[in-house]
Image (tube, rainbow, N blue to C red; front, side, top):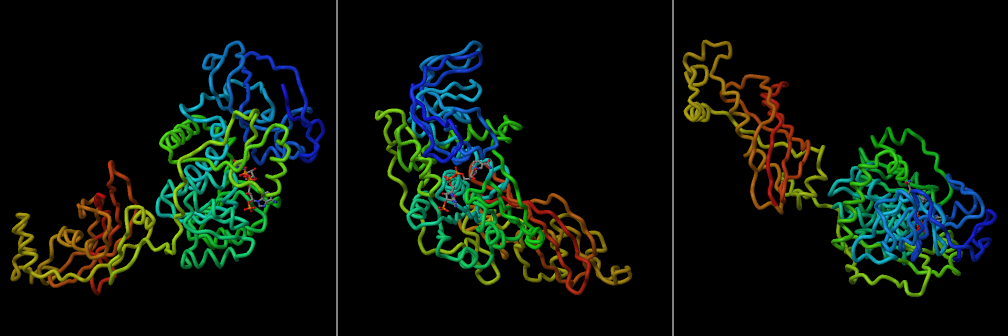
Length: 505
Ligand SMILES: NC(=O)c1ccc[n+]([C@@H]2O[C@H](COP(=O)([O-])OP(=O)(O)OC[C@H]3O[C@@H](n4cnc5c(N)ncnc54)[C@H](OP(=O)(O)O)[C@@H]3O)[C@@H](O)[C@H]2O)c1
């Protein structure tokens, strides 16, 4: 079998293509007859002895392959000869055969071609773990991806869109950024000729970005971190540009942000169940056609060193793939979606008078932790108190007997505790609406604390903060709102409550 060999550490040009004896299966391992091997950044490090794993010389680079099972070793139960599989091999992939631990080998999805199968696990596994588990990216948030046309970067763009984020793609050329737009990026920044900070400021109208996906490092890291929004998350994914940035920690303090490490390999090892769940979810998206890798170019084994050179020289957009025969062709996906970038703003939340208008539930979610507003004042007249007493059968004298109440410590009647609270639907209608919601607000009360009595004639208003939005099946959401019912002229509020509302799209 043919293999591209690293016999001494060095640049791609030092690799040599040689004929080797066919491989034999061993206990717990299988031999894969390779059809495709994708090119990943660690391949460029491993041949220079710069990677954390250091295989004995000679070895072939290439850590992600697809093909057929050629031979099965003793004790391997879940695979048989002829199965179409993909595998994370670490190295050994730029060859016609590889011997690999059977636990790292998985059956290919039905209908998936070899090139795609060799191109998805590393990029999408990393980026999904980063955005979902580490950043907890929410719909409606703004995601900035640095090195957005690279392998993991482009996967982050696609996944960010799928997760309902507004995506800003940053890369070094207009051609690369055009591909990012095809993959759904809403805004683009060419960081070779545009000022990263200024452009982020103008796109986000000064708010900054909620999540930064950084697989590049170097000189881009600090201006990106300086552009993060309050409570943003900065994902440290990789340092493709070479230099590991040293960041002044006061920036994290000033932004109230989190700098979060991402190490997909360790995550897969330490949290296999969670990783498996992620892979299953990703498989679902691939089956539906919601995710598709961008394949830059196919290289033959004889050209495999060029694929590594191209990656190192920043020429690859998406994924470079080495194939072992001419039969393995470029996959034909359905026509890519038209560019989503039009002249549009990030404002999915607008204000009409004092009312906040959310475009949809995603926009509402982006508002979690922020104020919804303050209602108008509402006067608690004796008529309202009487009507409430009649409706609730609570006609105690302190509420309704104005003469007797004059002798009470309050000097007048006081409203029922729940009367102020009962204004909350009215107040909420005044404060905000969700444009896409077909039904209005129901409401309930989770926790309530009455703090001050409310004498007749007092004026109350509600100040509300959106604490959380929980999705409800099929297309609704439960809103949890922290409300303070202020009492005019008093430092203490009438009551504080946690309100529950339901919105259906
Ligand atoms: N933490 C993890 O679990 C994990 C997992 C996978 C990968 N990674 C890391 O993520 C990084 C990206 O991996 P990848 O496979 O996506 O690589 P890639 O396809 O080569 O993409 C890297 C991108 O970085 C940019 N870049 C800027 N300066 C560069 C330079 N001097 N050399 C090469 N690229 C440069 C390039 O975009 P522009 O030309 O547009 O700037 C390129 O598209 C690597 O550091 C890798 O080790 C980390």
